[in-house]
Image (cartoon, one colour):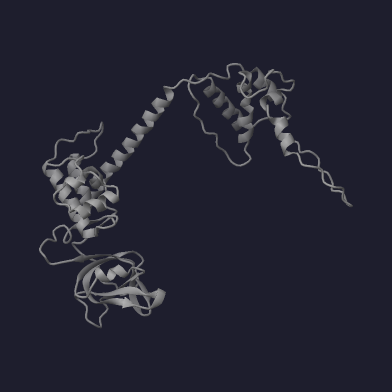
Length: 362
């Protein structure tokens, strides 16, 4: 009997090399492997017909390899396999050429006489129909094709050291064993998700009986992912609100004096933002707020203006705490910054540059 926490290395159906390949890909337990959902499905109950023209979308073809070998020379070498449909003739149109560049190991995978399934987009080049770097799988007539042919077949993201066929067999064996020893769903949701229990939906996600059943099963696990994400957000928010912060901004005398000294008025969005931030600063918890806006909308000015409540409590101000100008109180480092940014005067030119008047904000 296996469970979700059973290590994959303990499964008798896996060899040591296969266990190491799965562990290198990040799969250490049964639950990790079953969470490796298919990236797509192929309906191998009926394959696409061999096209006679280029296709705008991928096609799934089943045929025999009539010729295979390395072509080209130098850096342009590639491995090529010609696949022919069983209904086509030698000079017929039921042939597709598959090519793999910079993949010499394909000579050990594809050979003449094999039955293969190829998936990819067909293009025309040199009067031939070609699929470059198709997803390909070798099928055999050993009587064990129940999960590879004549049904909706899952296609997984490749794992180094395991071909697509063997990976499908491993997941099928693990999922079938979980079905045999399945218990009641240990994590019921407070809303209706599916008529099946979780284990049945998990098996249906990997090896669906119909297209509709696979969509319903995948919707369940998508909803689980969103539900888990929301729980994590609620937990983080509750943890954040449990912390104690320093209350600031109860008195806004300095803030009002700074506002009245401005030669221009603030926008309604700036006023609303300042009001909301002041309300947050008065709460006995750490503030967590994002101020966003377009370029030039006044975000920096809003942030600088909110230094005034912090200055009143002795934060980032001079030791004596006295400022004659309320604008200097809100910007305690303004003199130093202005001094640091001042450049040395340039030498006199024959044609002195015209001075521009200081801009006035309205």
